Image (cartoon, rainbow, N blue to C red; front, side, top):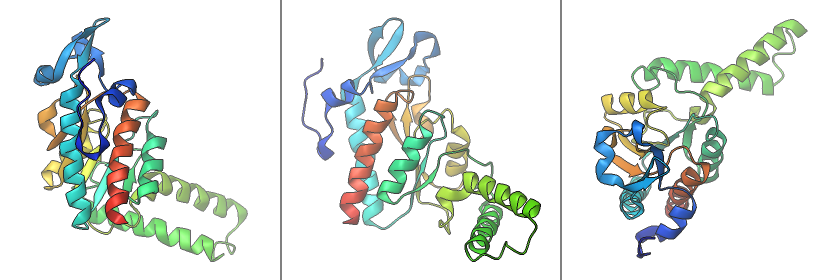
Length: 233
């Protein structure tokens, strides 16, 4: 067990390890660029250096703090099945935009088109709320309701995001690699949880940690939420 140093933002190594932040993937899946963040092996799986993880988390939180202080936009991205509800709940709790169902290709690189689809979604929702869909047949209304639900899955978390964000926080940079790629192409800063099978150099602010463990991701996202809410007070 590493010495439990004091870190900014209340980051605590013992708590991180209790949350499973240090549990990496099987040795066969190691990305060579993650070697410097690995401290050992357990049952043929790599152990992530928890102190380095804590330092990287603090670095990312400092950036988040600066971002929110400057009233810039942060988008939370996490579409992995076991994590998407957590991502959605935390984003809503601290007032961040989010993508939790799936990343649509072109969300950043073809933002004008995405914006048109979002506006169409908002128009349909408004018409339904005002009862303007009652003039249609039951079959037509069912079809429109399905369309609203589909659009909601795609755009609910970004429906009020009128411009590209200044940064994105990606909870699994391998699963949502397209989001990272589009962000970098458009000059959007990237923060990401980087497990032992991923490339830490692919994001601006990597956090070496397990992206499979719900408790690991929860610990990190709750720290992000704490910073966001404190600045917004």
